[in-house]
Length: 179
Image (cartoon, rainbow, N blue to C red; front, top):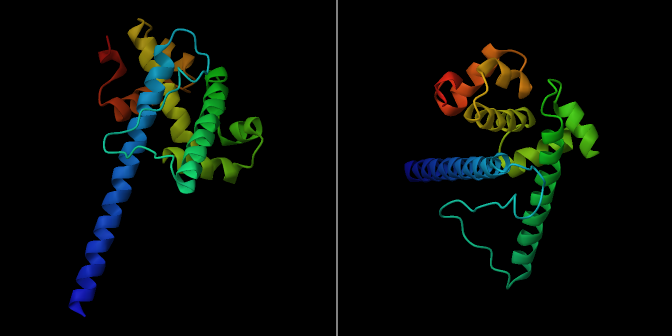
């Protein structure tokens, strides 16, 4: 019986470790995607602008089996979904009320469907995804020489103090330290 409990504990730890690694991989891919998105001068969603770079250790998709075709189709659908969502977020980044209700209506889907879809693709909630966009844009503006207050309002944050807290938690430094 102890052996069974030990085996279950080992399997549980292994499963949690795999889930953790997948979340880290998703975050890296999203960071790369947003970096590329905000690094370009003209923000136009094209295939070249929004390339997803696989994380280290991610297996390449083999298209020789029907299952691989399904995986490739899912990846393409996910990419198109994120491209459309990114475009909506970019157009409305200045609005403080850029929330799930607004995005769900723009994407023509229910709140729960939008939440599940974003959570399954990115591993984060809708608000976290929008905040990630705002912080990526703020990094670009800070590098261009905008002040912290100007940047916070141009990225749709309600106050410079809230912006500083979010920036510090995301990047580990204050926005005034970016130069």
